[in-house]
Image (cartoon, rainbow over all chains, first blue to last red):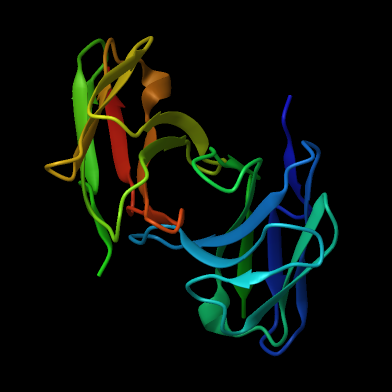
Length: 113
Length: 109
């Protein structure tokens, strides 16, 4: 079965801390994505990557960075966590660049205090 | 701007039929996805439509009208396990997904 694994289900961090969210997929997918999901809003794309060492900004990249050193791993970094970054973070992957369905991880609920 | 609209919440009875509507406005269009998300879980793919018409997949069907910018997800013979949020997402001309806020479906016995 296809699997996207996010390293933490729940995280609690302090304002100003550097936070790493890890995502690993085992499907040899080219594309990986980071979204945040907030109540009453659609999924918002933070960053995505179509290849190793490649990254593209999504709709809300401010305050975030990413790293993709290996094809299967895509990390989201909050350089200095702020309370408005409290959210559910979802990682996803897909095979092709066009109309391909996404496979999602179970999410990381991040609380920044 | 680009926009997806779907109802925030719907309630239906076990065994019944429910239709969840989605309207979209995008810069170009390359298809529409429906995903199901149970509380606390990952969204999972349900359907993809790019041509007008109805596509049936077991108890679930998805319809698209490109001229009207409209889609619906039809769930038949509702079961308690269908209680979930249903996310509509349209693919724009750059193959970027535009997501609706999701419809929370509550099934009552």
